[in-house]
Each structure stands twice: as structure tokens, then as C-alpha cells.
Length: 177
Image (cartoon, rainbow, N blue to C red; front, side, top):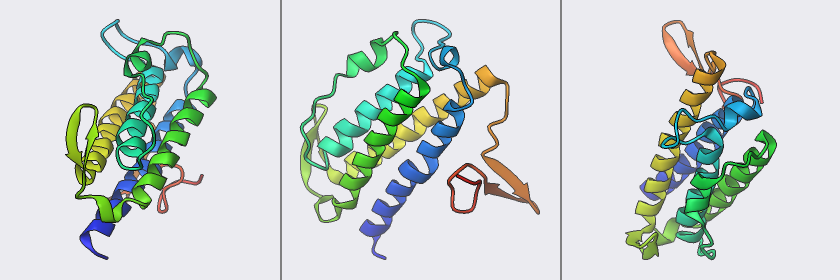
């Protein structure tokens, strides 16, 4: 496998098989109050972070790489205070990740092309790298808040014979779906 194909495959795997299933598993353990809880007005709730991830991945990948119209309203992602249900949030985020996955799958030959995204002039490689990194950082925040609110270990890893192995739902070597 060439380097470009490996980069694209790993990016798709992180978004679809690592981050999204972990968010889903964490969110499904929480009630609506926990999803919209925030320690202060300067911090984001899980709900706001999920809306933000959906908006960001659509803007950067679906639009920036895939060529779709950019219709993002970034301030609205953070301003929302009227709760959506976990099912609504998960449907929104899942749809955005599926759209991004499709855009990444078709992007291989165009990674070196420059394009405008969020007022920047970036290559397709930079777009995907940024989007996956950004998704990872906010996934960590979501998981931290879920642990904080639930008081539980989310159980995404298990130790077998001194080796730590993935155990989240949906991972090929991990938990059941």
C-alpha cells in the first residue's frame, strides 16, 4: 500500500472505527442533563462538542476535500442551549462522519491540491490531518466529561497478559457492537 492510501485508510479508521464508536458508547451511558451539563459558561457541553465536531468535519472534509457547499454556522454549535436528545446528537454526528468518510475515500489523487477552508489556503493532506486531529482532541474532552458525570471507567481497553488491547464496541479486536 502506498503512503497516500495508508494515510487515507488510517484517517478513515480513526474517525469511523475509533472516535465515533467511543463517543457513541459514552453518550449512550448518560442522560440528557449530563449531555448538556457544563461546569461554567466558558466551557462546552458534550452536546455542543458533538454539534461542533459535526460542523467542523463537514466544513473541513466534506466541503474542503469533497467539494460540497460550506453551510456551516460555527457560532450556533457553541451557542445552543436547547437540548437535543442523545439519539439526535448521535444521528447528526454519525451522518457527518459518514459524509467525511466518503469524501476521504474519493480524495487520494487530490491531496496536494490547495483549497480554501475556513479562510485558510490548505492542501487536502492538511485538511484531513487537521480534521482527524481536531476530532481526536474533542473526543477526549467528550470522554472525560462522560467519565466525570458517570463516575465510571468507560472500559475502552483491557489488559491481557501485559498487553493493553482495544475493547470498545465495534472495534475489530475489541468489544461487540
